Length: 414
Image 1 (cartoon, rainbow, N blue to C red):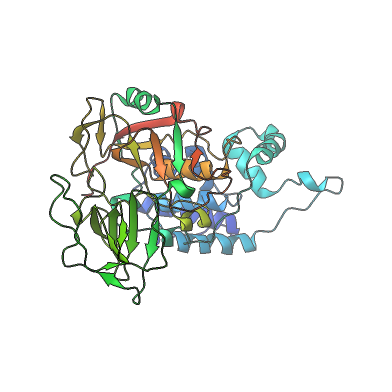
Image 2: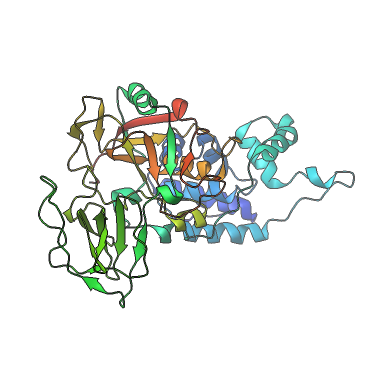
């Protein structure tokens, strides 16, 4: 149940701010700096949200509520109800329409600048420079997730531990000179079977070292004859029961599929593979993958996965193994994130898909799950990120990794 308090004022904005303050008190009074680290919003914006006087932007209000354990849907309903009751100020007769001093503009500038004399001038400049991304429908991105809500890839990690050599690790990661997104024909395909899709009993064509027993033993492998065999090393087939059949180098012989090796994961549970091995760290290939549904939703509500070019043979939580052989600093399972100080919305150099990736890294972070030739994230085969003009590898050169990327570890949930 959400905490509420008495409302000395009948003003809806004051009532909303009072409820935010009560929610924070019921959550133990986290500092605004702690709340900022959990949400990616600035501490000044979160503090201003609870001061009253004017209704804060919806995005800030929801971030405040989530940081204090509030239900997003409930607080969105509260905000919209308050917004309907807030009366817009009278418009001065000689004020041009494009610079009308709305409550949201005054609130935003007050939170950022803190100077009443410059409210209208600074507010107009800020709003003009910020990209006008259309907000996705509530819940759309969450519905695109794989694995259980408690899975490590579906959690925000506000208490990640910064590595002492974070700056050196960032330098190592960026040293190859490329930061990119594997998309279009460079992504890997995910086919979705139905109850009518034929299944086959298959045996791996080869056994890959210590990666465990046959992952497909006793499990029917779904395959539709109309599906194309891609020229990618990994193919994933989702069965109706939630199992993900992860096939390494699929081939067709006499209209029957076979895999050189692979893994089986239950997408309704944890992202670690249950049988076989699909990544060096032990995670499913689906863990951290950006899907078509993510791009369509307009935001990515899960952690990402990436490969580092110089993993050593060690690993940290949540990885359970490593296929690294180099002597570099990187260990599989290490966590990266973008510092909350990075004002992503104000960075007008970012392409739409870069902004989505940057916000995911700021809100959820990413895990090192495998060896790779360069620093890259994976997207679903054939998907088209918004603002991307390539067909294979979309560059991430505008994201300010060198300045704001941090490296560390996360701890298991208690």
